[in-house]
Image (cartoon, rainbow, N blue to C red; front, top):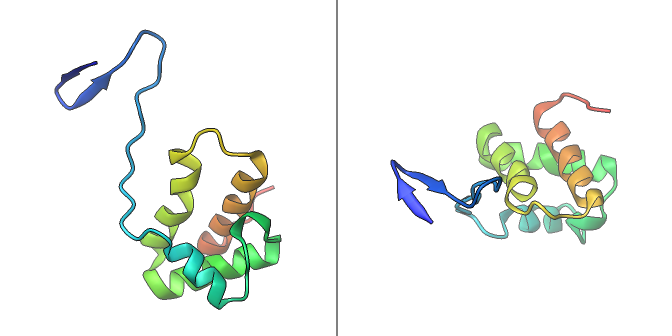
Length: 99
């Protein structure tokens, strides 16, 4: 791959690699455990929203939103159920309900 002007150039018709720096590995999991949520992959909608609100209280809205968006963007081939749960966490952070 050629690197020119800070842009990664890949093969034709390929998306550039997504690079996200995780500053606090495991932070969302620790907050979830304090709330009594055993696994973020198996939480229901109310637990996910509660987790989102707790993340906002602890880290602030911008950092919490980054924590919830990172797994969706970073790992492109996640199961749909996990993406849905992270979207529920985003609902808890922003207060906007999505369908």
